[in-house]
Length: 191
Length: 184
Image (cartoon, helix red, strand yellow):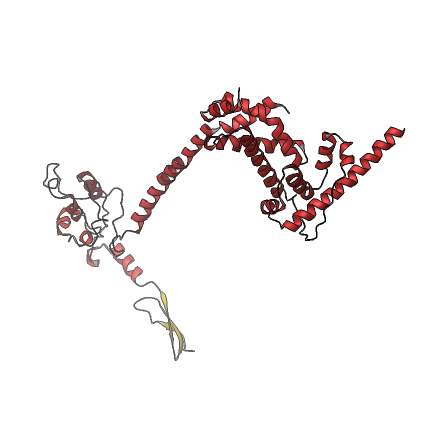
């Protein structure tokens, strides 16, 4: 038997404590890494489970090139001194984006929200939301007498474009084609 | 250096003292292991395992003479060998109650050297060999052997009897061979 080789083998086993001591640190290190990965996930998960605003109160979608007549907001406004939680009440309604309308908006939408989910907006973010509020285009209402003859004729023709009406009732089926206001409607016999 | 001094220094953590003890005791402990397992490689591995346990338990050891040290180390080695045989499932003893004492003929043994006897014992099946070693060489009683191996006392006796019978056959064959060789 090669005693030297055998002793070296035995000695490496006997004095291999250091490696085992290092191995003991792997477990706490692994636990720390695991916590570092899991805790943010749990935090995000809890935030997702928190109650949010009712679905009947949609937030306005941002629209580019929106024209808003909003009164200028001064940076030194008392809004800075007011509690930040009341600021969302100044958000404009999606239908009315004028400055007067802004003041008339009831704060119900924001007061209904829980304090946890209510966004705390700064002055800058509030301005950004005001400038991107959508504005509906209002069509001008014109009486037919105000139109010129061609446009009026066209409008009249457009009003009386032929169309077909179909009736379906328990007594039977019938259809009626309407050509214009003066022409008699073509009626089909009932089935 | 005396063994007692080596033990003192080894208890303090001296690697040189540990190596000195290993050098002094390794050969005899290897022979103990070789009596229980067939291959030399297994015996060496078991001897190293035994020394590992010995050095680990050395701080708790109370030195009371070289004989106690040898006995303790030998017991560690035997336990290692028995555990190895159990792991390998090589140690299968069929329970038997009938036991017949078969004494070995002394004149046959006289014609053989220690090495020849050792080689014959190693060639015995694991069960026979273990009981033979524990009873004839280690000097254990059948009750002790039965407790150690988890068998009945009768089984231990029958295993020993069969081991002796088989050894006699092997010795007889060897004797014939010697006779044949001497007549040529």
